[in-house]
Image (cartoon, rainbow, N blue to C red; front, side):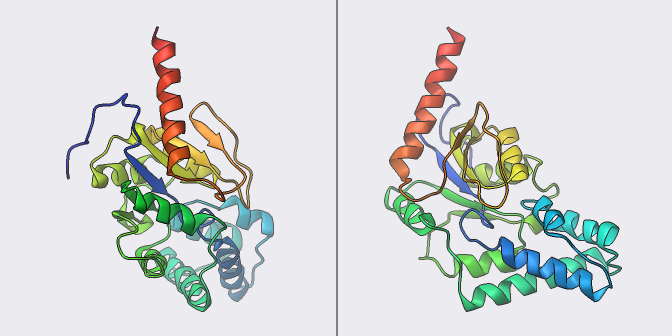
Amino acid sequence: MPEPSAAPGSHDLAGVLLDMDGTLVDTEPFWFEAEKAVVAEHGGTWSDEQALSMVGSDLLTCARRLRDEGGVTADPHAVVDRLVSHVIERTRREVPWRPGARELLADLRHHAVPTALVTMSWRPLADALVADLPAGTFDAVVTGDAVTHGKPHPEPYLTAAALLGVDPTRCVAIEDSVTGAASADAAGCLVLVVPHHVPVDDGPSRVVVPGLEGVGTADLRQWISDRADRAGAGRR
C-alpha cells in the first residue's frame, strides 16, 4: 500500500471516505423489507425498532441477530446473500440517491480529492452502486466482506485511508449511523454526520448537518482546517 501523502497535522483535506447505505443512497428501507421477509419465512416477526437498531452494522452481525432474535435458522452467510440479493434487485429498478449525494461526489471528482466508498454492504451491492456513477468516482472501495472487523471497529476506515495512501486524521468520513460514526471516530477521521433514519450524537470530531444538499469540497476543506486550528490551539 502507498505511504501517507503528508504528515499528520496538515490543514489540507487528504481524502473523503463515504458510507453508502443511508448516506449516499436511501437503501435502508430495502434492508428493512429484506430482514422482515427472511424472519417471516421462519415463522417469526421483526419490528421496525429491531430493524433500525441494525443500521450501519456489519451484515454478519445482522444475520446473527436475525437468528438469535428472529428465529432464522439458516447459515448467517446464506442469510446475508439473501439480504444482499433483495437490495440489489430493488436498486436495479431505481437507485434511491439521497439529495446532494451525486452533486458532492461530482464536486470532489472535479477537485481531484481522493475518495473511497466505505460500506458494510458486500461487494456485489457496492458494485451495483458504483456502476450507476461516472467512472473514477471512487479511488477505492472497502466492503463488509473485505474486512475482518466491521463497523464500529476502525478497520474499515483505516483500510480505506491506507488504500488511498493518506492520513486518516486528514480525512472527512461521511456517515449516517451511530456505528459508522464510531468507526470513523476511532480511525481518527473528522466525521460529517448526516442523520437520516436514526439519530446520531454530535462530538468533538464531528460536524452534524441535516443533509448533503449544498455541501461541497470547500466546506470539507474548511472543516478539516478548523479542526487542525483547534488542535493547534489546544497544544499552546
